[in-house]
Every structure is written in structure tokens, then in C-alpha cells.
Image 1 (cartoon, rainbow, N blue to C red):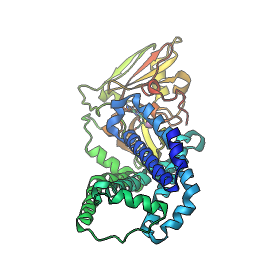
Image 2 (image 1 turned 180 degrees about the vertical axis):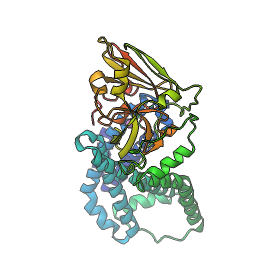
Image 3 (image 1 turned 135 degrees about the vertical axis):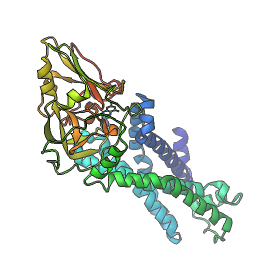
Image 4 (image 1 turned 45 degrees about the vertical axis):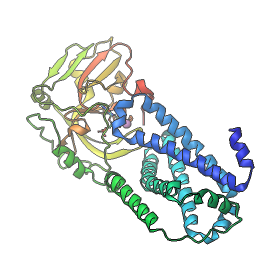
Length: 411
Ligand SMILES: Nc1nc2c(c(=O)[nH]1)N[C@H]1C(S)=C(S)[C@@H](COP(=O)(O)O)O[C@H]1N2
Ligand SMILES: [Mo]
């Protein structure tokens, strides 16, 4: 740190150079941690490491405002110097816009509890959009500015002179080789990042009436359970008018799939009568329909889902909870994920063991054939591929709770 301060005290040009370097490293750290956080692949793999990476991302993200503030103090002089260089001015504005936008939306995401789901949803879209636009821009900027693309010995000398404002920049000769390489890098970035950007655009922005992509998930559904559940009139057409928003597919294991032969649903533990239903028996149980919103703790929501299923409290009533039971332990058929509700929470009217969404079977990617829904809590309570409910004494720490998520999941 003292080395930095020393360098900052020296010339103005050097200040800018070291600011630029610090800023570059901050962006690299934020990009890497951020991409790990959204990458589905890392989710199960990293386990609690993910919670640490999230904290690193938040702390470095907050710190990223410091070089921006420092730059803004120097900006007047720098801006005048760039008078003849509209492209450099443009670049400064883009980078400042990106950094401030990332910072602002990031703070809102960090404070998701204080701002509520609709603000954090918008913040997430903004944060992602800036990433998809800004990251390729910054990668392009740093590759094309890298020394190996410049003619030998020119870059460093020119840089310091320019920054010191002593010499105007020499007129730039046209280098066809350089232009070619830049073009190639641009195309390379578009080809590598373009498809994921478009995919993201599809899932995040053009998302009103999410049923068409859910249809695609249903098409590739790997469950083979017969008979198919028949929707109640309130489900088809969906009473809520169709879900608004898109689900992000989250899992900590490969997506499990089931057949009639290997699927069952158990309720056991401290109950008067335990049950083990096969699929045929399970789809014959009486279902109800509700409309509710679905909020993930990472900032996205899907509104007005029409869920059809069995109220958890009805299942508990059937089984008869013993007086000694304190906790409802929920198991996923993925063999790894668990979570819990207190008896009081499990008794809420809208906690549902869901079989259908918007009048259709729940696709395996979204937790089908059967998943839990706890609308008043963040969705990490909404166990996917739910296949066992056990009534236990004492407590159990759920999958994400064991890895740093708050036990209190109320939205
Ligand atoms: N079995 C299982 N259930 C799970 C999860 C998971 O990784 N595995 N993720 C939870 C979290 S954090 C969320 S936000 C929702 C996501 O549901 P979706 O993948 O259907 O969008 O499922 C919850 N239930
Ligand atoms: Mo979540």
C-alpha cells in the first residue's frame, strides 16, 4: 500500500498509469469471481467455496469505487488533455459508465433484503447486461492495447509523454497487420461470447410469459413417468395467466431423472402412519392450485406461477405428526440436497408439493416430477426432485445453510 501511495505522489502521469493498473486488476478479479458465480458448472463443484467467492466479489466490488473516485479527482486535467482524442474520451466514458453501473447495481444486489425483489431483479438484469457488454469491450481494449500488438519500444515511451502532456501524440500511421489482428480479435470475441450473450438476452429480457422456454425444457424432459398428471381446470389455462420471468436452472448435482420403476415419494420419521407412494398413487392424491411468486436469493424472480400440487400441510395431516417431532426434513431425489422447515412454517397454506406448473408437468430441469414450493421464503427452501419428507426431533442444517446461506429465508 505504501508503495502505491508513493507512486501516486509522484507525477500526475504516473498516477494515471498506476490507477489504470489497479483498476485493471480489480476488473480481472471481479470478472473471474463473477463468472464463477454465474457459471452453473461451478455451483455444485465449489460448495462452500462459492460463498467465499461471493464475499470476495462483494468486497472487491465495493473497493472498486476507490480508483473511480480517485480518477474523478484527476479527471478535469485528463479530460482537457484528451481534447484531440475523441476515441480516448469515449473510452474513458464507457469505462466510467461500466464501473459506476456495476458498482450501483452490485450494491443493490448485495443489499437485496433491504431493497426487495423487484429492485434487485432490475439490478441483476443491469449487472448482467453491463457484464455482457462491458467484459468483451474491456477484453478487446486490453488485448489490442497490449504491448505485443504495438511496434517495439513505442508503447511505453509514447504513453508517458502523452500522459505528461509534454508531447502531442505522433500521427498514427495505418498498420494493416494491426488492423487485421484487431478485427480478428473482435470477431473471436463475438463468436465466443455472442451466443451466451444472446442466450442471456433471451432468458433475462424477452422474458414475459416464460412458458415457451419452459416448453423447450419439457421437450427435453428426461423423466419417464406415466400416467401424466391431468391438470385441474384452474391450472389449464393457468389461473395466474402464465408465469412472468424465467427460471435459472440450479442444481448441485447432475440433473436426476426418474422412471416409474425408481421413483417413489416417502413420508416417514416421527409420524403415526408413514407412506411410500409410487407415481401412480401419488398422481391420484387430491391436488389444489395456487398462484405465487418465486424469488431466488441471488436476485431473480419469476412472478405469477400457477402451481398445482398437494399442500404440505395436507400430507402432514395424512401422516399424523407425532408430538415429539420438531422439524420437517426435506430430501431431494438427487441424493445430496436437503432443507428443512419448522412445523409452523410447514403449516403455511401456500407451502406446496408441486406436480405441475402453468398446467404442465414440471420438467426435470426445474425439479420435476415433484418439487417443493415455499413462496414466502427464498427458493433455496424449494427443494427440487423432492421425494422424501421426514419428521425429526431437533434440527437439521440444509445444503445451502451449511454453506453459509442464512437459516432465515423469509423474503
Ligand atoms: N435439489 C435441489 N433443489 C434446489 C436447488 C438445488 O441446487 N438442488 N437450488 C435451490 C435454489 S438456490 C433455487 S433459487 C431454486 C431454483 O429453482 P430452478 O432451478 O427450478 O430455477 O431451487 C432450489 N432447490
Ligand atoms: Mo436460489
